Image 1: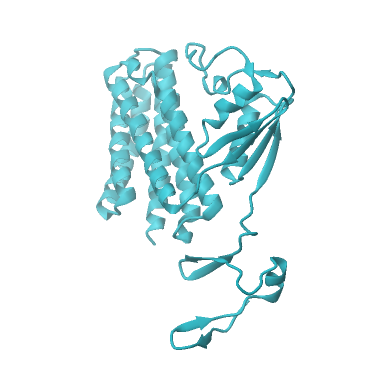
Image 2: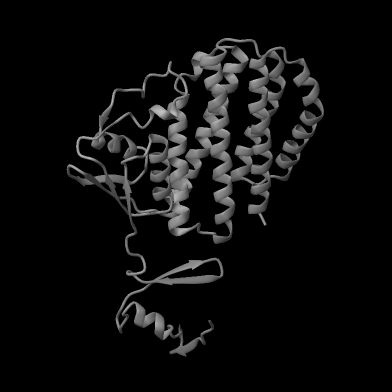
Length: 328
């Protein structure tokens, strides 16, 4: 809809609000509205329009991976209040058990715990969520944070730093054939997922200060988290499946990916045409040598690592494309 701008006095310009919208939210003279500037537009909202969003989850009949899916969906979508219902005296395994693929990692594989303890462990994974009250059959959770552009920027930087940490430690383990470096990689990945989800939540609740970048940042976060998952998979293989194996035939591809990631992390915060050219050169050189390198791999262990590294290489290309798009 269009509205005419009216001059009132020497320095004041006003416009009328749509009458149906005013009636819907019962606005009268003196009512306050929020006005947010986004690029070349203004977004006007009322306190009622910003009312809390509420959701409910019933744990009965859900396995732990499915419970995680429900929690993450509610959290990422920006709900402010969540009621978790459960059977009295219900017992569950640790929610983190199913994030560990190997029996050797027993840190999170505790005995069954009460539903309240289970929800406590879940809530600790989601920034801003706190348990407010509980009874025999339900737990009330509320968001106690105040999402902002500053919080988004800080959390996004943390995501990048955690991916960088995972990559450096994984490459060090490959170079040295010392998998003990990676014993805490699961904790790093949980932390990465925590900040990733918080960024998604903020984008869904308030968007980005540069609204045109919102969708690009959704995609960027998805691929950064996916890169982290690939490094976690490599780390688990090194720790549990082929401990202290020989990976000399994948060192070249790992070194090229290491350089690309270092360039990308710098590129993200300071756009640089030369860095983009270098990322592309590395990719081109690797492309023509990758088939011969794969043929040189002598074991299934090397081929498995090779496979994950090639996936990471594709993700870096996509991340670079997204970064270029943000510039225009």
